[in-house]
Image 1 (spheres, one colour):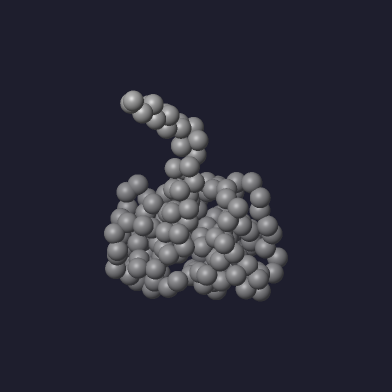
Image 2 (image 1 turned 90 degrees about the vertical axis):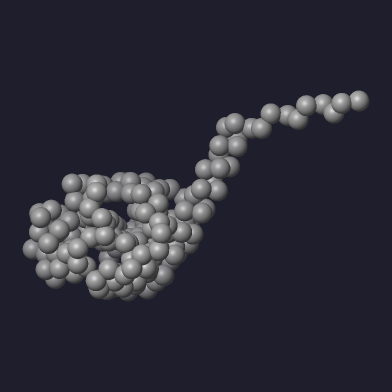
Amino acid sequence: MAAATIAIATAAPALAYKGERRGFDRLTFDQSIAQVQKVYPHMRKLTTEELGAAVALSPFIQRYHQTEVKLRGLSYPVALELRFWKEKLWVIIVYIGGNSADQVQRWLEQRYGKPTTTAPDPVWVGKQTQIVATLKESWIGINDNVLSTEAQTVFMEGMRKAMERQHPAPPAPPAAK
């Protein structure tokens, strides 16, 4: 999910979608872990466990989990996975729990209007944020575009260095005398 979210977030500039804001529910992107912990004092730190969305491991990423979050308009509580990039709130993953995919799709469209694209999943691309609804897998990802661009740059540089280590450049031929 992180790679897909990052890739889409760095696409061409977009218009804002209905109700776009730099956050979700009671959270704002760029908040520190301490600030988010004031909203969700019982959130627990995650390490390598997967909750459903793909996990990107990096020393710059911290992950937390909050269960039993009630969102107005949904029948059942959801769980949140909160991902921080360099200790700033970067990605919010909403695990839809007992809510049906159809109900969540309607809820998203009421809040944000029609998605920017629907193939393969509904996506709302905005100026500041992006929402990817992976409803077949029962989660929604909301991310900050600025932090996603920064994260993508770091990930790509790491991948480039790893490729260089795996396939070092051949030594230069001896100089002609």
